[in-house]
Length: 235
Image (cartoon, rainbow, N blue to C red; front, side, top):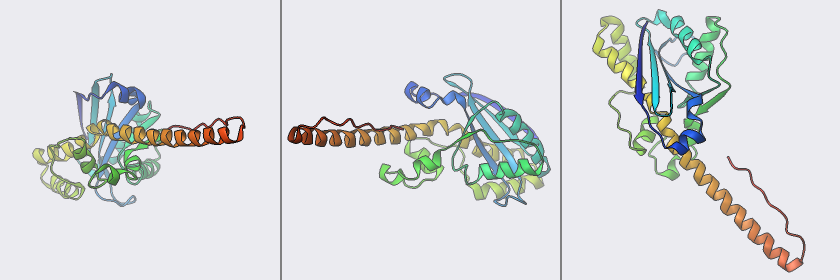
């Protein structure tokens, strides 16, 4: 197993960092040899978390052979154990079921952190109205001005990993790890989109509340009945 660590600056507006408690979240993405929970292997895990307000740490665990899957999962369990919240992009459909199944298979006695922030599920209902071409991670990244260095997709990733297992080319390893690295390092930045969505929903709720209050005030003038108090719950 190959392990690589990075410490970089990932700076967000203070409002977003505080509002979403960014330093209490562990950001995660995995790569596997395919989509079959029984037969395919998890072969790359990237984890990210804030050390302080601006400093972001990423740790990558790369399986130089699929037989190292259990070792990767043990490292994942150790790293995630101190977090109660984790963040992914479409992780409820891929990362989470894969990890749970594999942890069970190796009898590692691991439970995922209680709260899963799947940013895909937040954005999907609103992406068209916001002018985002599709709800893919790369489309959302492009929408907020992120330019990736890696140029491969998931299907090419699997093909390249199979080639790596034959020739163990270091350049191929770098490309494989870069793809997964960028999947994680960009997750905190996508909270800018989440914040815009929440602000827009709050505004719409406030406008709706104002209309209700205006109607009630009008009715109160006509009936001389006490004005009813209307409240609404914000996100």
